[in-house]
Length: 223
Image (cartoon, rainbow, N blue to C red; front, side):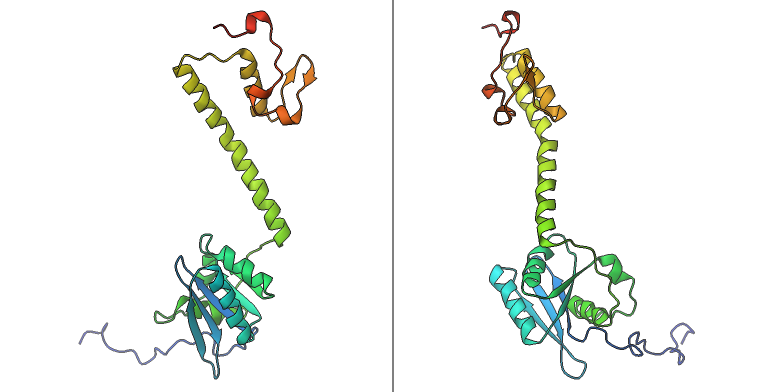
């Protein structure tokens, strides 16, 4: 037998939480997937109860009801894509303290075993207060932030679509008048165009066909 294969009597089983006390005794851990959500809650005599749920709205409310049955107050979940958002908002509306944990925070904690489910591992360090929660604003600010981000994306994607329409018109030999070009440049600049020293009404900006254009004779499109 080689020296590498001989058992080392000095090696002992690692118990990273043996000398620590639980900070959150009523804490739960959640592992969120695309098709299944696994929830772990503390049981009697240092045991853990694990239950699997679906991802539909009725399943999310069933998770909240099951957590209330076991007197859970705090819930920790890993930020996996966007799958965590419906469950986070449902549990937050039900009165639970929800903590969003990044994968980097979970990797910094040693001692995980291969036979432990993800939800069990999330519940264990969360009950000892070892997980750092990510910042998430209140519901009203989240809705406003989502609206502003959507508006910014729409403004960013506006110019390429206008260029595609202009290219299609040029391929069909449909020449746009200079006033439309000026409207496009003003629209990209973020302010409504001016016509004869007069600002167009806000309801008329964005669609060149609805603008009260006043063109000189030499700028009018030729048939």
